[in-house]
Length: 198
Ligand code: GAR
Image (tube, rainbow, N blue to C red):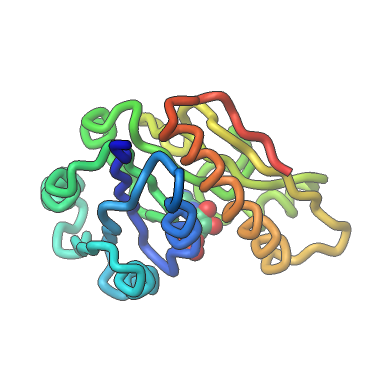
């Protein structure tokens, strides 16, 4: 079997990256080809190295507000790794429409809310503040608009009356680690029908 090649972009601890990498074994139709970070300090880099996966870092800071120049550098190791699928996994840089269109139809993102609710940052605090009774996470195809694009899966989590941001974030993250691998497996097999958890 020819495996699909998956590049994973991270900015931080990389727990979602680990859940994706650890899922790509056995009869899974994909294998990781690169873990790429915009941040030398990303904790996920050593976890990728421990798993024998190629890593690369392109620091965004030297490029200031010049997103195109940053992305031109980011593209180099990415294209070299010849990915079929790109998974954003806690990658905290906004990508330009030009970059996204280059990988149209093969880039996924995980976002910690039930999209289309709570795009952007601080989703857990905003969900509690809004008095929502449920929250969760979404995996979607990446389009030029932020935290938008066709939904490939969602996992729902109840918000408790006295919930804290930390407790809620932890429960959502637990489901992120189930949802993203489930969606990737389906997507790599050519199936874009949505996954709904639990
Ligand atoms: C995850 O909760 C992910 O959903 C979120 O960042 C965290 C990364 O954790 N992503 C976003 O907020 C994207 N805007 P991880 O590095 O342990 O996977």
